[in-house]
Image (cartoon, rainbow, N blue to C red; front, side):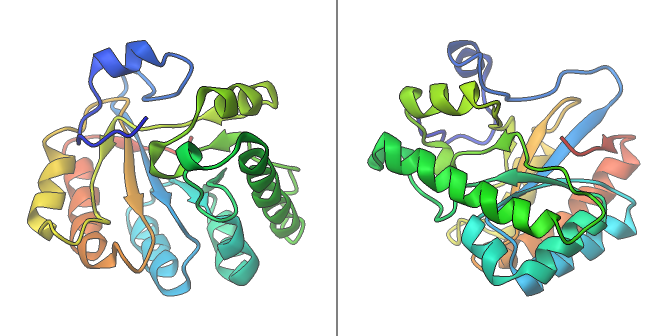
Length: 217
């Protein structure tokens, strides 16, 4: 699977019902998620923006980044945000053999466990997993779900990582498509920062004005 549209339609959600696309509710709750970190400068900036609005989010971390930047990883946990697994090396499931893919997820989990052991939040592992690029084979998904992982996809994707779109278009992608229950994808990476720096503060302000509540998964 490769989902190249901004708003995930009902047809796709129905075809893949074992994945989490949104969290339907009548309380105006939405779920901000950030992929590809931790990245020291970008993640710290993101955490500060979320703190300004008293918002909690979910960070889908690359294991190798957790290894390289443990302090930034700990800061996200200590700020009360949720952590998800995004593989150790940001692998494309379509082009990776099943056994290697699963081992890479396990390696990421090990780094998350090691990082959490340094905090008061000593849960052994996260059960949240997002496949990089949204690309995962059914055989890979089946194994991960048997291991207890929830496969978290998205309802709205900002495309902040796409340098060919303007920050204004990136913002429009989010504001025109968000609704109660939406899982929204951003990226706390250097590649995405030009768009994220413009979009995130405006998104947070918009959500506040419209009465949305941002929660972690």
